[in-house]
Image 1: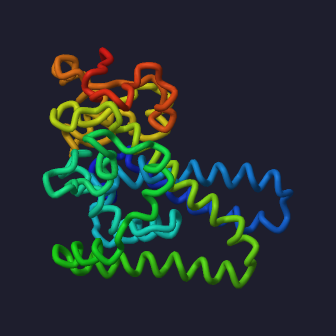
Image 2 (image 1 turned 90 degrees about the vertical axis):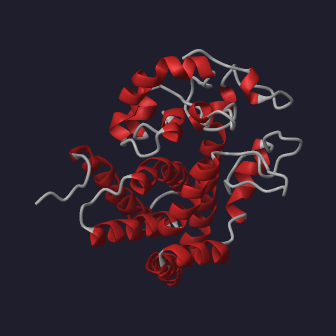
Amino acid sequence: MKILAHSKFDAIPVICAIAHAGYLAALFLLFPHTPLWIMLILGLIYSVSISWNINGISHNFIHNPYFRWKPLNYAFSWLLSVTMGFSQQFYDLVHHKHHQGNSDRPAENGDTVDPISIYRHGHDDEPENPWSYVFLSFFRDDPKQIFSEIKRRKPFNAYFGVIEIASWLSVMVIVGILNWKFIVFYAPFYYFGHCLSYLNGYYRHYGGNPDEPIAWGVSSYGRLYNAIWFNNGYHAEHHYKPKVHWTKMHRLHEQIREEQIKAGVHVIAPPHALGFLDSNQPKRTERPETQQVPL
């Protein structure tokens, strides 16, 4: 009987997720016996790995759950949640609303459909300053509201999300009892990892066109980046066809390439998290769609 639902290649992100959980456990075990400077390097790697998991493994899992058997999908959701310190079920709702709004600009009521739109806290239809978006977005989620919305749709998922959060908190309490100094070490890297995820998200849409479906996202086609981040770079393609499996993103890009060029899809050279280094980024005083890069 097949275990994987869509592709044998989904075994790769599944194994990587298990390894990610093992890496976190290894951090705890190494902490009392490892020089601080080495632990700081390992902590920074953990921060980067949070963004890597959220935007690659966890993200692709939302759109195409890896397993045929639902209990396995819930178990994997739990593993992701405990590894990264947030509920995968809650992330599922937020991310689907992200695709409903596609980083939209505020409507007449001053709000956006997309709760993580880069325009939501901006002014004059301009994107928010990246500094505030990256470092404040972590504190903007309303867990009670997210829980209520999930409960209206799928009550079991809402309560399972609470179990995910409670599991992570329980792990942190146990770890704190065993070695409270590790929690002091862990907390800033945990927060910084989620900030890096928001940095990634910011430049996946900065320069995109919220009014043009095929240009909603910003793409980055570096081979190494997409190999490591499970084709996270094909973000314009992903927003245009969210259900396309991550292994088929390059094929989709080839199929719609001419349409993308006509629509002025914004493309950057570096990985999204380093999007601020791209020389072709639009200035914040300009409409993003006025700055276009050929594919």
